[in-house]
Length: 108
Image (cartoon, rainbow, N blue to C red; front, side, top):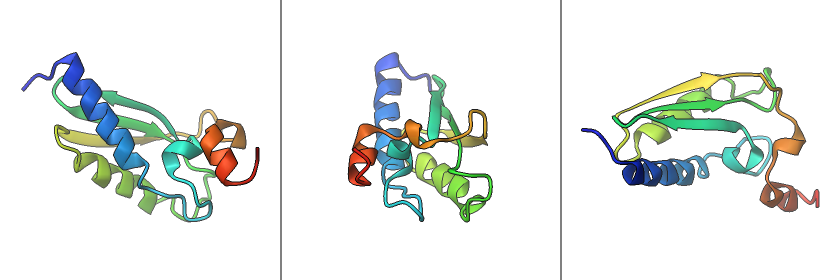
């Protein structure tokens, strides 16, 4: 099934909503607001690629977090498949956090 642009936008919104339920274990903020998700690409067939990073390459959840992201994205209605591309370019910095995340952490 080919999705319309509007349907893809809805799937994207639902993916972001789902990503906001995943929290970094060291920082009490979700991975989306932390700025760990660089890009969410959705094909018109519902195939999703999430480009994301970790707070550091030595992050204690380096193995489990991408799997959790993949499982949550796959659970979104309309998603046919999900692939996680982990990157460390650019390197994550605190500047990538949303205002909401900085406020939550008392950084504003």
